[in-house]
Length: 199
Image (cartoon, rainbow, N blue to C red):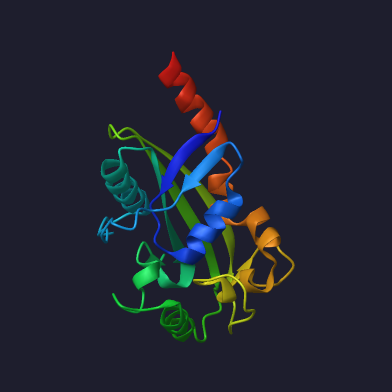
């Protein structure tokens, strides 16, 4: 039996990636057009994912799914982390965020980093469940590649072949990405939830 999940993300690139990763057992429903902005002001990825999923679940009276992702760079003491999307300021875009990251990393010999994604699934009643995924790698010295979004053009995953995420095909990225690892846990999670609800 297919399960409906309303997607909380308003980021078109992220929605495309989530939809691509979703199994056929889960029907991903787009975020409602009449839902306003959601303040992502929690101090953790887990908190932001829960806030977003809760807002959508309340608005739609349906099960909702939301994720929050952070790039944690060792040389920057874990920054930008939860503020990855706003690293260069509240109105910053991906280009400005990547540019600031490369400036901050100039001359750094320790370039280790990891992407971490937390996915929250929320019921209309407020019950929530979390899964997460991590991808470790290093920050490139310059941007490379034109695919993907966010920090993909400056992140080289350890499990790859030296290419950035932005130089990989979508399928290559999905196989090892943080978001892929998190979302691939959803079918088992939803099966457990549905089984509990039906007992």
